[in-house]
Amino acid sequence: MWFVGAVFALATTVQAATIISNGAPDHTGTAYGANMSELLVAEDFTLAGTFDISNIRFWSLQLAAADYRGSAYWAIFDDNAGTPGSILQGNVAATVAAAATGFATGFGYAEYVFNIPVSFQLTAGTYWLALHNGAISDGTAAEMLWSNSATGGGLAGVYTDVPLAAPPIWIEVGQEGAFLLEGSAPTSEVPEPGTVILLAGGLVFGAYLRRKR
Image (cartoon, rainbow, N blue to C red; front, top):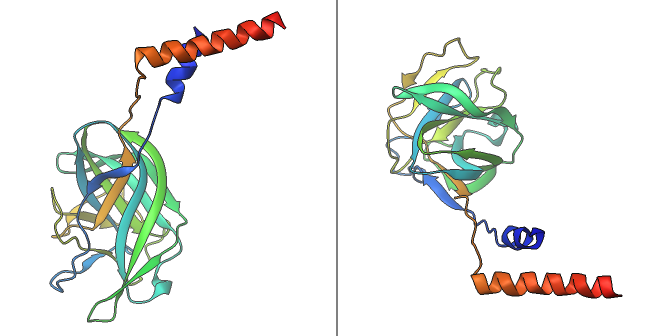
């Protein structure tokens, strides 16, 4: 019955969508962001089910384009009683482009948006997305902030010093970072029984004609 398996494999579909949104950047001028150059900054999120994550998007505020070091470290931590616990995914610096959004603050910072392509799966639970400007071993000063979220959700963000201590000491930021996760729920659409029979029958008939020739 290999042909039925082939039919089912062809029926699998994946559509990317926003899985988690922690809100857009806050442009009210009352809160700006957390410095992600000298610190590793983390935000929590909660999944209600299993999802395949394909993209991490976040926004920064920078005094100059050169404040971005050319790569963004990212990691997904599990939750340890309201703070990041163990690293589950990532722990790498991804080389991605910074795209200017055209927004500028009243104190001379410009806004940028980043998209980090990823590929991993998370089950239901609470996790932390952690971001840093450049390699996790580099904690030198630069004016790049993880932009504050206009709405947010869950707990306030936390930060720890870079390079990381063992174990890290997490301190509350007092605001939330703007980010979203894109991906899809693993699904497999099963064709109607009649469609399976027709397709399978066609494959069998084709095999019969080849054998007869």
